[in-house]
Length: 152
Image (cartoon, rainbow, N blue to C red):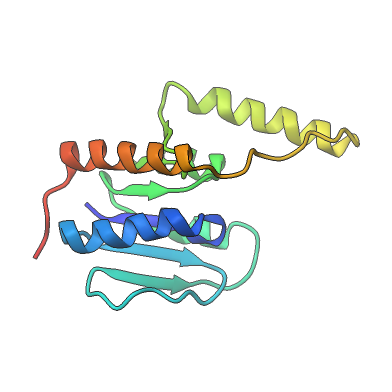
């Protein structure tokens, strides 16, 4: 199993958790972004810079991931593609996207886009909190205990 990170919008505290997990569990963590990212020196952590453009990083993640890989993303359409390819998708607030909830999330996203397109101020997501960080760490830990075997 490998962990892929949709890194352009991923909170720094989530990346820090993933860096520690990579070394502790000897799991490959790959950050994919439109910009150059600095990552800690580790044989288990790498970054991939893709060209600028809508969904370029998402497409690269989907192209490279294998069934059973974990993708960390807040992007609902990317999460849907990950599930279709047999991967797991976890958002930075610790919530897994599943085949049971993804259709509803896609519908709500489309509805909110429509509202914003008609001029309604829908606000943004709540600020990333300490409880979000803890929820992510706990969800990641449970998932890895269930699915990961360290590589060497």
